[in-house]
Image (cartoon, rainbow, N blue to C red; front, side, top):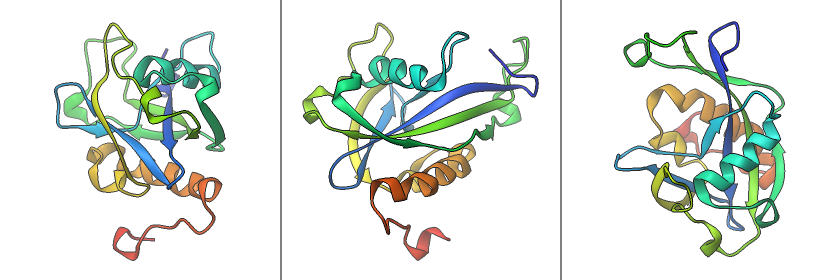
Length: 167
């Protein structure tokens, strides 16, 4: 499902623990780390897609997390031209995402990367809330920053990036 502007509707998922750290996952057989994310199906709303992707990608169920909030609107990123799949119609030029901040209320052992027939990730770890800005692929960095900045006050008032990460 691609919108008229060429963007695929998607959800991004930030799972935090009680120490304001976030779950950072490595794409299977790659040295590429990211937050869980995935497309919104035609008959889903963003929250339904978030729960489906949460279960598919990291094995968590709705009763194992608490929804802290979500971004007010869609955040968009463009895929670099060299990475576009030009043989697909309609052409997808990027993603528009609603981002959700969740707090893990279950034990860490509830995180399972091996429950899907086609796993997305092969490792995960807890990282500092702002770490993803230094580690995510360049074309997603601005959207990650927008999501993290908007959602930070919901996790911990005063959770701001250090001056080395900009303002």
